[in-house]
Amino acid sequence: MQMNKRYADEIHSALLSGIVDGRFPPGEVLNEIPLAEEFGVSRTPVREALQRLKAEGMVERGARRAVVVRKMDSKTLHALFEAMGELEALVTRFAALRMSELERQALHDIVEAGEDPGADYAQINDRFHGALRAGAHNPVLAGLLADMDLRTMPWRRAQFRKRAERIRSSQAEHRAILEAILNQDANEAHRLMRGHAAASLRTVIEILGSQGPDVQTKATAL
Amino acid sequence: MQMNKRYADEIHSALLSGIVDGRFPPGEVLNEIPLAEEFGVSRTPVREALQRLKAEGMVERGARRAVVVRKMDSKTLHALFEAMGELEALVTRFAALRMSELERQALHDIVEAGEDPGADYAQINDRFHGALRAGAHNPVLAGLLADMDLRTMPWRRAQFRKRAERIRSSQAEHRAILEAILNQDANEAHRLMRGHAAASLRTVIEILGSQGPDVQTKATAL
DNA sequence: CACCGAACTTATGTATACAAATAAAGCAAA
DNA sequence: TTTGCTTTATTTGTATACATAAGTTCGGTG
Image (cartoon, rainbow over all chains, first blue to last red; front, side):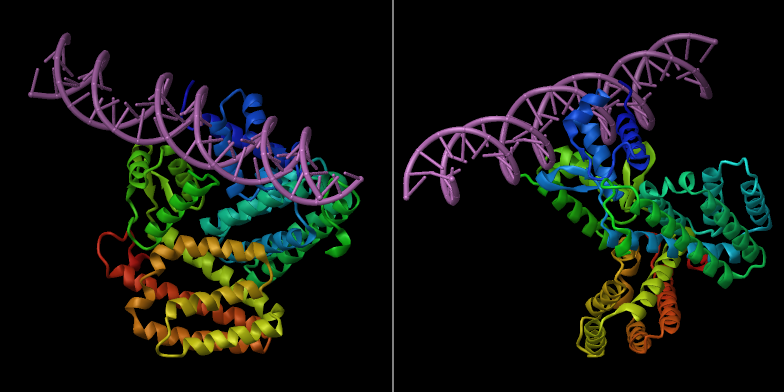
């Protein structure tokens, strides 16, 4: 077998994708031996993958010291989205102050592309937020935000597929944020991004609130 | 031997302390076998400890795929302190809005204790910032800030031991932040905490700039 | 004398075996 | 029948052995 960190990396990626796209729903138990057999490797690389998932906050220790995909109560979910929203707003503030002319142009192009009705809006959305992260010119903040992105992904993924009107309002919010950045109005950009994040949270809560018992959250409590 | 995660935890803590308090300076190579012999265990728990340190950003992969204590260039160090300062300011804003009467009283007591000339100011400082983190009532933000705390610790540790006048100005800043929080003036609390963090950064840069070649940073470039 | 290659060195990645802990189940006694 | 103890099963934590990759050194060849 070829060795350099490869199995552990692959297994980590595979488990992470599985968690993020819902194949391992919150509460799912991840035991080492079955996973090792499934991947055709020993427990060692599986253990390393699980440890990394734990460090990333994607799994936690459940009863019988088992590793389970993280469940969120409504309070924690709210704190998670609040933190992410504030971080995004902060990054947007920096972006308004620091983006180069080239970066502004690229952001403009992304917003334009997102207004094409045939566009893959989930991908456009990622590119928009990615451009802001890069434009803030602080890799540490960008890294924190990437972590939050990952941690909230299991609850955000259904957002755009389910609500066409959310896409339209998201487009308008992106356009407004773009304008504020082009005007280098950091306070306005910050304010708009907070609103944008809050709108996303509201949509997530609506969707989760109507999904049944595999979602461990109560919209009313938020 | 008794088993529950114990050796890996102990070794992780020991290495972390060593990095934070300077016994393992930036650039130091951490190999598995010597560490395992030193701690009297096998490579397995040492590997786990190193993986966790890597996830926490305390070590990185160097040449020959060795694990080395993280070195910082001046740009990364600046980004790190900037991110931490903004996070602390954010947490302070929330604390101004959300602390209970009991929490306000406790914060007041901490500031008072810090003005006692015989106090251990490093510990008071930790308690002050810890009270704000708790008072923000967002465990996710508090966790992010705790991570940043850890990551900046190797560069902050000498601050209070070396500069008596920094302690005095820090006391005054804490007092001003306390007043803003008691007044529930979130904007003022936020503004003051940003200044407080920036002052800390300036002190760190001064100290690092005068310490010689084991610090991989140039104060002038910041 | 210089340069390229092969063997050796050393460290990490993986597999497997064993130890210990916790929860569950079964049995006995009140 | 219920409760408590003991045993057992399952899973994680650790130790150790082996495979592999990257660096280094030494030797051969041009």
